[in-house]
Image (tube, rainbow, N blue to C red):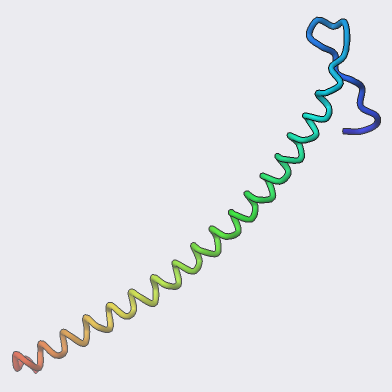
Length: 81
């Protein structure tokens, strides 16, 4: 809002409703707070996504190593090697 705010007119046009400015200011403040919180949530989700990607790579590598180790043990046990 720029400059001095004028009182809002009521629907009938024959008066003002001065309580509206205070209520609107509260709503604007609440929306600013919600906007900041949403930015924080977005940052947190990105961080979790990156961490999950790294965790998946480590887990997948471990699974491959175990599978190759078991295949080697099976090959030795069945005298394929």
